Length: 186
Image (cartoon, rainbow, N blue to C red; front, side):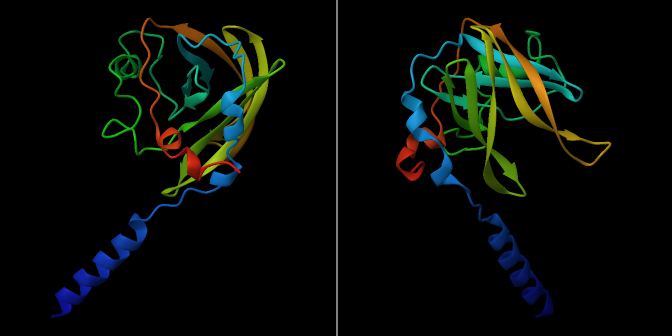
């Protein structure tokens, strides 16, 4: 009898923790998806080197973007896990990317400034991060970015230089935001 109660309590707690929230949906600048021209080359992905590894960003010509994680192996190495998953279109929420929002967002350029908004996972929920920077050429940009500092146990702002790694292939940009656009923006 007692073990049945414990199991019921565990099921209730797990169920409550299984719910996720997507914060700041109304603040995603969906109106910027139609900004043209996009002066950056999108035939591949952009990579910045950080003290913790490499930070890849995938920019799509339709204004969507993805950045999921920092990787230890150099994503410009064709033998790296990131490159192989990118090539096989299994990088973005591989089980069913149509429902994954982690790392997805939008990007746009105004004059020589680049702006990026994307969702990150915080304790099982998703919140919107905002970044801005400067376009340096059609294959590079600098971005003010917050990076985790293990020594200080906090986020540290930094400016990262991203350069294009060209590829002959590109994954599909289908994503949760695109498929549910009416739930985002103002």
